[in-house]
Amino acid sequence: EAAAARLALGGFLTQAANGKPAPPDAKAPKQQSAPPPPPPRLDFKGSEGVEELVLLLRRGTAEAQGKAAAAIAAAAAAGADEARQVVGAGGVAPLLLLLRAKGDAQEHAARAIMSMADSPEHQASLSAAGAIPAAVGLLRSGSLGVQDVAAGILGNLAIQSEPNQTAIVAAGALPGLVSLLAKGAAPAKEQACFALWNLACQHPPNQLAIAEAGAVRPLVALLSKGTPPVQEEAAGALMNLAAHPDNKRAIAAANAIAALVPMLSQGGGPAEQAAGALMNLASNNALNQASIVKAEALSPLVALLQTAPKSGEPASRRAREYAAGALMNLCLKQKPLQDRVAAAGAVPLLVGMLSEQAEGAQYEEAAGALTNLADTHEENQAAVGKAGAVPPLAALLRKPSASAQEEAAGTLMNLAACDANKDAIVSAGALPPLVALLGSGSAAAREHAAGALANLANGRPEHAEAVGAAKALPPLLALLQQAPEGKDAAALRGCGGAGVAARAASALALASLHAPNAAEVRSEGGVAVLATALGAGVSEAAAALVNVSKGDEAARDALLAAGGAALLVREVSAGAPAAQAEAAGAIATLAADSARLAEAVVAAGGGGPPP
Image (cartoon, rainbow, N blue to C red; front, side, top):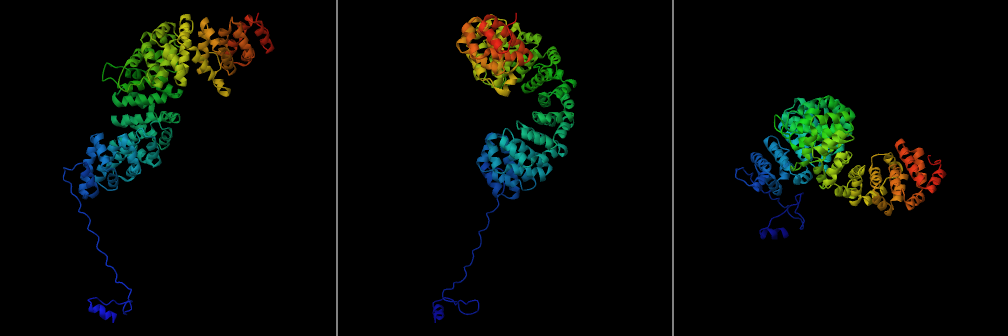
């Protein structure tokens, strides 16, 4: 009856699966609606703006995607503003998706990403979006034309980005990059060298990993067989690899030095990077230094310093800085090389570099080369001063660069050892910035500044007076109070030794020959400070104690109270030969002036005063 009623009302009769009428609560199955048709693929017209091009990357036909990627690549390569527009329009994600395609679209997308990666502001966003593993994948499976672009992407992402440098190596990029060095076409070789150069820049773990991946020998081979751009990039990569001490021997063993030296005369980028590689290979490596000299590198290195060469274009400022750095490392504690480099005419060229105001100029290498040329070499000290080095060095002391201050103070320290330079250094106004460095400079700058003050005061009473007038004595005493103790003190032992405390004690000893300076040191509690420094192994403090205490009974009493007699006796019996002589002279002078001190010396086991 119910079914008949429904039929009468225009309904229908439902049946259960077994042919019987369905129960009253059963419902008919709902029919699914068809999905909407996909939006039509868009075609490339050629007049699109950046946002429309990005839309084509997502919704265009295959052909349109390729053309849009090419247009975006051209726009991104045009400049930072254009690349910024692409990123702002959301172009990164669809470009990375296109890297999975094949053919022209893939290559155009890769070139667009490479151009965007060239800007530091986009490195983080590209890396977060997955650009690093995508580029590494292209190294492994991309076409030959795409592999060099993939290397370029990685090279750009690695520029001054320690997180990206680490991530690229962790993603497994090195085998593919090293393979390109040997098997790739010239553009691929160039980009692979470029990537390795940036991956190794100031990144010691990567420097080791790249060498362990087998990059050294193919990089060295490219120095002789590559095109000039490839030679430049290969030498740049080797320069950064050679910054790691464990790589220097391997690079030299691959005959890199013999290939780098001829490049110094090529000019341009190859000469610049060759000089940088030789600079790093020579740093703290005596075997490499000898090999570089044997390869006759000195003359072309000096020639690179010239701003007006007899033939060809002058080298870039950076090339000249690298050449100066190489000469700096080669001349360190090498008297014959100091003679040869000076005789080759390097001194006036290096001095000229100190006064140049080129944009981005670095002064550390030129100042460092002059420092090492003048080190314990009186003729070179006089020649450097005569060439006009003092005023620009004094000016460098005031520059904000800590490394420039450090090297300038070191050069002035060595120049001040020559009496002919002392007046010029004081007249150039170097004393105030030297004194300022005692309290604010790096450890090396403080050491060099103290050494410069000591050398200025040595043998020149008027300069000793000027050191005191410049308020140098309190910060010199403060440096002694920072002297290391225990095992670290051993590095400071020995008369004339290096180290901040040794230089400070020497400066105090020489400055205190001027009586008012000695009085100021006493008033600042200097006797106890010097005695403590002597106990810490700073043998130079013995001479300072003599000059501060001589003729002053209160100072001698302070010395006794600080245990100075026993400390001096210990130096005589256990110190280095120069320290023994210094302490013996101090005992002789002080004991002759004080019966109580002579008795204290005997009680400490030092015997009687000399006759």
